[in-house]
Length: 323
Ligand code: NAP
Ligand code: F7E
Image 1 (tube, protein in one colour):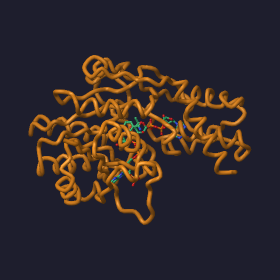
Image 2 (cartoon, helix red, strand yellow):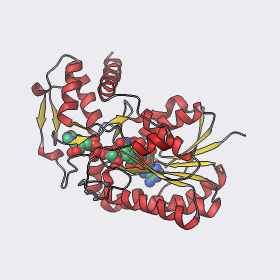
Image 3 (cartoon, helix red, strand yellow):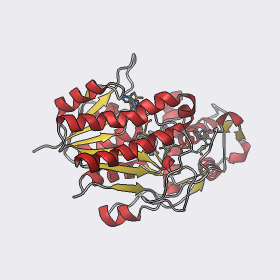
Image 4 (cartoon, helix red, strand yellow):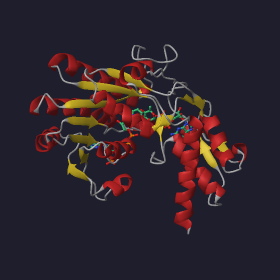
């Protein structure tokens, strides 16, 4: 029997990688998309004949119930969210509606339609915020530092609560930052690699960034979607930290990216206070020992290879655009 998977947030970075991965595993892949006046399917263009898209919205409970009824998925991956931290300071209520209450709406739909559907919730290392220990594990206390982080803490605990209350097979993946050539250009890694390509090709002179000292545990999105699938295919539902265990600064990311095209980052990067946040998460580094031990998951792409992959992809894209 062909297994059916439903992905909310299929038009995002992780949605695109997960859709491709599940399709390769033989799943029938369905995606939830919200209505927009212009189509936003760039990241899944190459999969359009392989995935079935359905309109629904995290804000509309009945639309999610109807979608789950229609698709009857075996597995549901809830990736949809307002995921950009600075926007969460500007639009905290909308972030709470999407990123926090949206999770309850998805879980309620599953509880109402079919409790045997397995659910993955996209939780985040932003929940650790001001870190209480290093590295962070599944038992490290949360101290979120943004409305986004606070909303994700709600999403995490409501997932645990539905597992405990209704015996749902619901997993929360506490994923640390993961990047790729499909990353949105507002996030710092892609902002850097896009600028490196444009500066190298003479289209831009300067790159304005915020806190260069911020430390992150950056992995490759392709590796991380494999972990989501492993969680839903394990015997028991549980929560897992997914990380590389290495941390690097924004400055270091920029240094390697500029070096890769023979440039010196100090000649091009300027600090702009507009990109500083009201409250910052200064350092994050995860310990994925549980995922290694229980699921057999491990990251495959190194930090240096990730930076190079992203710079190369942006160089190729920008060159094509100016041809
Ligand atoms: P992303 O690129 O920002 O994608 C977010 C997705 O959510 C998009 O498909 C977006 O649709 C959809 N969405 C937003 N609001 C919606 C609504 N009201 N109704 C329906 N869909 C809506 O995020 P990502 O990097 O792929 O991350 C996937 C998930 O993992 C998110 O929940 C994020 O918070 C979480 N996460 C990400 C990371 C990371 O490092 N990438 C780490 C930990 C956790 P549109 O295309 O229409 O905007
Ligand atoms: O910032 C610093 C910034 O926006 C990383 C989301 O996927 O991962 C992501 O959240 C760091 C921060 O990602 C700029 O202050 C410096 O310390 O790339 P980011 P994020 O906030 O860590 C987590 C795990 C998620 O769950 C989120 O959904 O870089 N930084 N200068 C900058 N950041 C940005 N965006 N732009 C700058 O110019």
